[in-house]
Image (cartoon, rainbow, N blue to C red; front, side, top):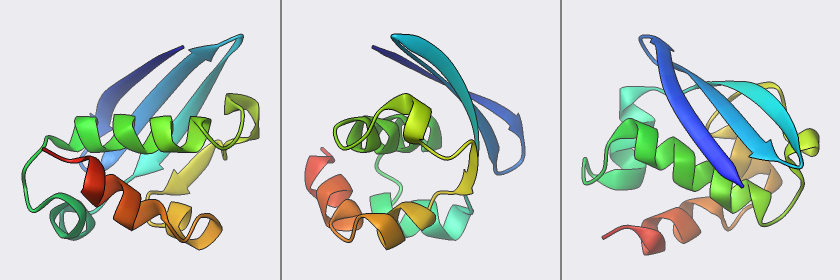
Length: 89
């Protein structure tokens, strides 16, 4: 499995997931939410990659929304923010 994150505009990232089939996703992320989750300890792209790894442990890449705001993950998976915080250096 490969997850590639590319910034396409301020606060907008394209994520390509290669896992059996290849999917592309557009993710938006505010600086405030990035700061809340990471305290600035990791780059935005790393946070998004870790978030996709979190999702891929729970569902296939073909089931992940094609376009979403990163905080939406918390609605579907209440353990998301805690899990991400625990995984940071």
